[in-house]
Image 1 (cartoon, rainbow, N blue to C red):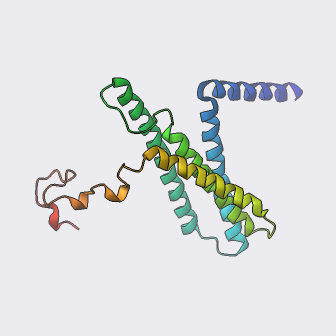
Image 2 (cartoon, rainbow, N blue to C red; image 1 turned 120 degrees about the horizontal axis):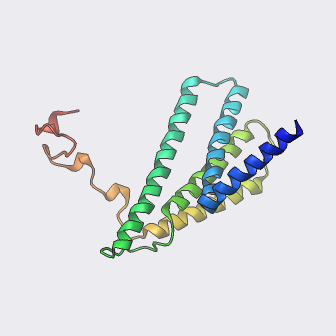
Length: 186
């Protein structure tokens, strides 16, 4: 039995060391974010159960929300890869500091958001939440927001300023491969 425990410890240590060698601190940030997502889901479910309002539909909606977050983080990682490849080509220079990884800022933002949500959920389970903890998370979240805003720059268009498919004239929707007039589609 003792040999099995030692083997398990060695295996776990080897896996953690290999993961650290491959991913470094970035991998640990991803692990931390994944842990906060799971903990937020669990604390939200516990708070809802305590209040007698747990619903599988609401829980399922929470899982869809987590899935959307995963897609945004993957998109940020692909953005990092695309920016790096474009910069290495030497053809384009971006108007922002390319040494900052977009995915790190997105992961930090989501991690802090999940931590805040966990505190909100936990406050439904107990009335003792250190007020300075909430302020600390708010300051950290605001700092990450400022870093993201600084990276994007003030002169870059916001999402609201970018054209959408709705702005295209009838018949110009690139997703409509049939060639017909797409203005009549809902």
